[in-house]
Image 1 (cartoon, rainbow, N blue to C red):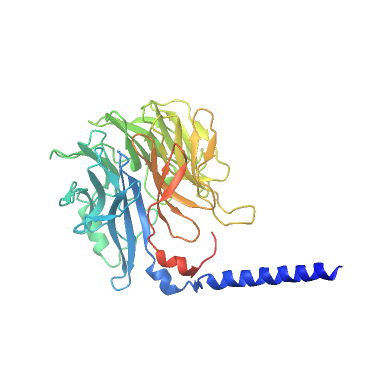
Image 2: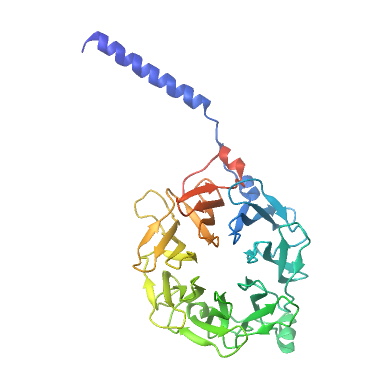
Length: 414
């Protein structure tokens, strides 16, 4: 080889090496991720966009080593980006063993509601975004663990349990009391609480152990999922029903084996969507989306292979559903887990992934105009932050950075 060519190649190699060395020297040195870092990590546990699409509410959980608990705080920030405002400090968010706030917005977007502690019982509190004092909306003797506003904002529906009989209370106070896994639990009831001060109405019978529900768009009835009994295996035998808000006999909508739960009416009121194991009752059966006419009829199941559908929300035109579904262990050897936001068209079952790259997304909620989708997303090197997507362009914007110290830590991919 010509000596001049060799000289040029050597010079290029030296130049490339020195350039890489300079770039490496300019990179910050990443520190190992330690147990102390783990114990300080904050986590977003709930995200909800306001009906008018202007704001996003979220709850941030911070571990407290001195109190041995997670301290939870409510924040609201503009959905197009901006500073977060902390609200409702007077409310102790239900956090046993971890925060379970059940964030909701009033239909007029003026108030955030969540489950907080009143004494030793979880109740629903309303927290105005104006900064006015929070107020309790429920006083259920056994507490509340799920709630939804009526479409007109004049009532709440919530889940609570029946109280124990005096004999059950006495036996549980006895130190020799033995808890049996197959023993019946108190019934889980669906209750409607008018916000004008009227007495709450218990809608569902004791034979129905309710675990999920939603209001019809016209506010006249509630759809709910329920098991015929309590116990460990009961959640794997749920059916779907509807009941008038004023009370009456439940109407069966889906009566088949397996898991059928999380019913949600389409905005036009024509359909009920739900998650289902499609007749399977084993604990590891994958869950797919399905729809059924709101008055009952043929079930249309959208099988997702091995994916497991979790949270979902209807698009406002009732033609599609936004959902998040995990893909288990990646089969291509690159990553271990994937849970993206996707969109399913109910007319033909076509599904489209909406986010690029490796991500784990949670609980999408949508604005009333269908334009803005808010959700929590973890991207491999974060625990999770608030994102808002413009559904017209599919562009997502990250609104928070709750663990900035992770930028200086050496972390692996998902």
